[in-house]
Image (cartoon, rainbow, N blue to C red):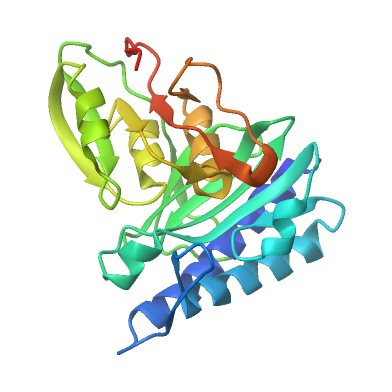
Length: 265
């Protein structure tokens, strides 16, 4: 596997998709439809998906592709596959809150090993380099020219004063009850896969998700967090969160910096 080529292609496609998403986001109006599972989908989701899928299939025709917006791809089973959420945080997009991301990842043997998370409205980009280490890029995000990058690393958590990040759109009592089992210094709210990235940069120590997600929601953020030294485990037994599951549905999970003393459910 040419990981440098993969890094370059994923980064470029995320930027190009982000540009198209922002064109639609900044328009006076945009179309919103309802999918069969009652979740919303916009023309930005579809445009970004088409752009990314075409680019990945052209660059890596030998690697299976799973993407949220193409139901036929959800039947794919492979030991190595690319997985895409072209616009994670559609509700944030619709409500013009800005916390949406483009997510592209590579899964190998059940583990997300490479990924990119780009938040075009926030001007933040996180990705794994060819060696798997995670960085944040700053600058103009030119598609074919990597700007200034800085390595990112998880925090050294203080279990008597943890920083916790939780969902903006999916916060519920079960999440609050679990968070209450920790000594929390402060709470942050964020949308989409940005929560993984806040743990990866050390801006938060812990991100529990007590609710359903799909693998395309989490793979890229998981890869970035792993590249920064963090972990993602199942909520129930604290075993590693695995990918390539039937239906691509995740169990509840916890993303955290090593050193956090995890509580059982």
